[in-house]
Image (cartoon, rainbow, N blue to C red):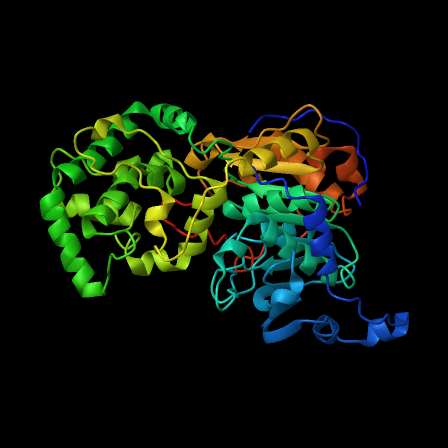
Length: 487
C-alpha cells in the first residue's frame, strides 16, 4: 500500500512483541468478515453512510450522536475471541466512527484502554482533516468475552482485532489510512504495524514505552537522576520520603478514606501495600503529568503538615489507585504488563530503610484467580522489527516523560521513519509541542502518508499545516490522569 518516498535517515532515536507471524496471520485472515455485495456507483452514492456501515457483517449500532460537520457513531463489532480459532466463539468489541467524508483519509486510533464514546479527533485526524475509527482494546469492559479466557489477551490478538476492523471498513473508506495512539495506544499502533505491515499507510505513535528487556530497567534510574532540576528532584524526593516516615498517621488517614469511600484491598493484599505503592508512584506520576514549572506546588517536606503531605501525594498519585475499585478497570493492562509488555522496576535510594516492598510487580495488581506467566522475548521481537523494518512511522516523546526513558529506536534499514522529542514536554507530548523544524517535518510526513499533502507542503515542509480548522471540543486531549504506574 505504501509509496516508497526514498530512504531518509531518522532525526533522533528512541517498544516490542512475540514472533507469531505466518500461521497466525493466516488464521486472522480466515477470520475476516465476508465482503458485502458490491453496489453500483449510483447505489453507493445514494445509500446513507449509517446503512452502509451497518451492512457490514457483525456490525451493530449502539447510538449515533450529532456533531456539526460530522456523523458520529458508537458501534459494536463482533470479533472472534481467538483469531487463530474463529469458530470457538465471539464477543462484541466497542468502536466509534467519526465520519467526515469517504473521500478523506481515515485515522485508526486506540488509547489501548477503553474507548471514549464522545466525539473526539486525534492530532493526526486534525492534521489530515479525515475520518477517525477508534477501537476499545479487547478485555476492557464492556469489550470482554464472557467467560473471559485471559490467555486470549495478547498483543497479536489485539492487532488482529484492528486488522479485521480495518478490512471491513476499508471497503467504504478507500483512501489512505494512518494508525495512531498515545502511550499504550502508541504501543498498540506499533504492534499493529509489526503484525500487519501492509494495512496502514503510516503510523504516528506518541509517548510509546519500549521495555525490551523486562529485568533491565537502569534507563529509568538514569532518567530520574537528571530530569528537571536538582532543586525540583530533591523537593519531590523529600515529600516521598516524608510520606513513608509518617506512614503511621497517614495510613490512619488512608483507613478513614477507605471506610468513607468503600475501598477494599483484596487484590494488592493490604492497605499497607496499597499505601506504599501510591507513595512510590509519587515522583514518577509528577513527571508523567506535570511540568518543571509545577514544582512550586510541591510542599516543603520539612515544614509540611500531615495534611499537606497527604494532599500532595493524593493529588499527584491518587490514594484510590491501588484499592480494588481503582484496579478493576485496569486489570487487562496489568495482566499484559505481567505477561508480555513488561513493567519498570526503579531504584529509589532516598527511600532506603523505609520502603518495605519496592516497586511491586503487576502480579500484585491482578486477582489471583487469573493465571499469569511472563513471555520473555515478545517485546524484543517488536523492538527488533521496528529497528529494521519501520516504514513511514513517526515516534514522538516528551523530554521529561519517564515512559520515554526506554523508547523505540529507528535503525539504518528503516525508511521514511523518525523519532522526535518535544523539549520539556511530559506524557502529553505531541507534534504541536515539537521544535519548529521537526513540527513542520512531522506535519509534512503525516500529510504525505495520508495522501493529502498540498503541493506547497510537499515542496516546503515549513508550509505544512493541519488541514482541519481547530475545534475546542473535538480536539480536546483526553489525557487521563492515570496515577498508577501505567502508560
